[in-house]
Every structure is written in C-alpha cells, then in structure tokens.
Length: 100
Image (cartoon, rainbow, N blue to C red):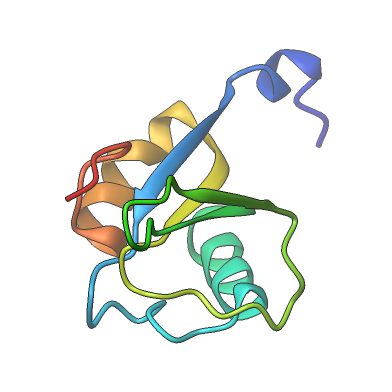
C-alpha cells in the first residue's frame, strides 16, 4: 500500500547514546542497523564517536558495515516521530539526544 509522500516527511533525525553493556556495545554497525530496522523500522545512518582526550566527537556518516559501535558512541537514526518513546524505553534506555 502506498502512504504517499506525506508519510516520508514525518521522519526525523534522532540520536541515541549506546551505554556500556547495551546489546549494541561491541556490535558492528550492520548488526545495529539490521536490529533497528527489524524491530522499529528505523534506519541507522551514522555513528558519532565518543570524544577521547578532550577531542570533539567524530561523526562517521554511513560507516562501513564492520565498524564497531562502542559504549558512549551515539547512533544517528532516521525514524518516525512516533518511534521516539519506544526507542527510548525499549531499546536504548536513554532519552533521545541526551549524552552522559
């Protein structure tokens, strides 16, 4: 069924921190991408690498499939606005856009 272009514009960029011990901590970008899409129809598009030694975060857009996601990294995703509470509650356990 076609939902029309209006549904496309209800998407937004969101970012979520991967916390230590989270299932994505140590996973490849491809694994995280597949899980996000399968469970929530969310598309991962980038990793914002955790800052190290006072350096600013490094944004890695469309990372290689084998790029490793680590604790304190942020995953940037394209998602429906309505997905935010489910992602916060069920998957990441942190609020969208909030880092430690």
